[in-house]
Image (cartoon, rainbow, N blue to C red; front, side):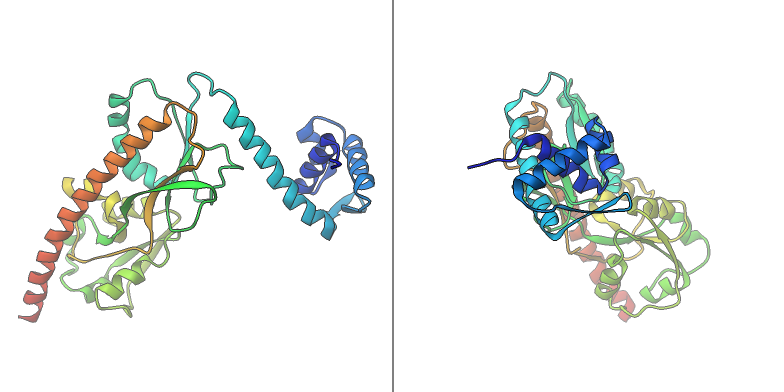
Length: 318
């Protein structure tokens, strides 16, 4: 079986990804002319034209686009296989991605516990909501809210993301009633553009899906909405596991004893080839144990909310 020259394949993959011979040359540390020559070598080898060339601009032909997709997967496999065989340098960081809200509201307040139990570990966090591909991304694990599949990975459930309405106790001292669901129309509802359907899910559970009249304030992330709620700006729709500490401290309160399941749940995900970094197993075991504690706290609170909701309904009827 004939295989094209690897140098030519590398030049093609880079130029196809960037759609520029000049940018590809900069990444590869060669001249644009060298990139062009290598692509000509590959085109001659395949007897196919891979790029359209016009006025210093290039674009992939259909054959080139199809070939690039397969070549990209092949390079990812080579990268993955190489990393799997290579020893992890001593002290190399464990690379984990997750959302900024999860990091700020759940992970960071617990990190002292991790380092107390497992001193000497090196953790590198990346904030991202993008889908993860372990063959492509330089990651050992990711923590995701969602149900989408991550290719060639192991998924471990952490906890659900039940939704509750929260505000600061200061809000109740401003003289605007907040005794009934309909009173929400007289307040400011704090939304996260990352979770646009959360308020609709909760209002449906609360029996008032068509609430109108409320002021709306939107934030790029849920953590900003939670902070605005703590500052007395309005009422946020929050994921219960991420605000348990705030509820216990009294920084936030739930004006209504109503929760509703989110469509998604939090998972810890890692490649099906076990990460070779020695910090991974301690981190995984610690995460699963801390998640178990969070789930237990959530269940206890939800039982109390169910009791309060029954009393709240009786009071409303009376």
